[in-house]
Length: 336
Image 1 (cartoon, rainbow, N blue to C red):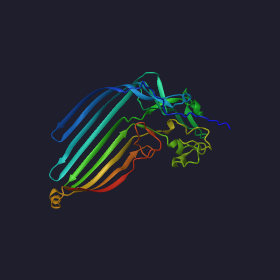
Image 2: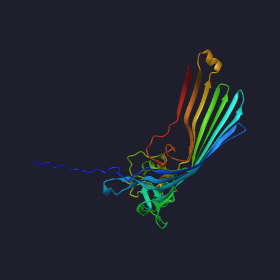
Image 3: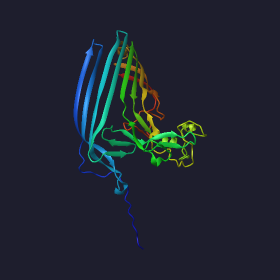
Image 4: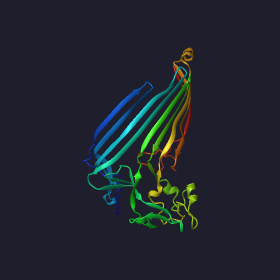
């Protein structure tokens, strides 16, 4: 009996590169610390960092047997400013009110690619003159109100129903224009209340989950978002959700700027109410200190983003990652 052995080569994640080196950075920083009238202090930091031999993942043809390779592909500049401010608004024997504020602004730009003009990977493009996390997507044009069909813009800027003819455009970046945080702490005798707000503004998120949850009939076995109820149903309907077709031959749920959203948000990150025993009472109880507190995290968020959580990773790509949940905790800290 003859034995036939068939070996199948799997598609590996990446191919090795012996020439790969560490990234090299040239940093320039200026920092100023200040204090005014004993109740106001802060700092200003301005930075400029140039990176050489930037490590990037470059996709390869599937015929190579690999998805791609990491290589020293180019150069990039990061520059920005960080500002902090701390104030003692009220300070006496009974009442203390402190405020801490921080602000950050960063801009990055690819200044040089070594071996090509562009690198396309997933929803992103690496190209000279643009940020590292720049989205590059087929340009969505909405829904035809006459027949409910999905539309895109073609290379001439005209409307097309054919997804294959849709032009790709630079659609923005996952980087926020700026971030900021504000923390206030109020103390009255043994009681203390503090709350921290965090703001991220101007970043974009590609909501890949909606490719499934609003798929216009591509796969009706999956549960759908309630927003699917806004679908086109009759001539004259004005909506951005196409008509539902079994199997969705229109490809309306394929990757495009349709699912790109404003990811800006304002979040109450933390709020804490606490009561501490006075030193005299703690001493009588033979304690160094005792503190009872009620703490809540991620209690409130203001955003236009339709997904579960606008707080995403730096890539701005939302799939099925677990969201930050709101939590409430009651605790007791005792130091003997």
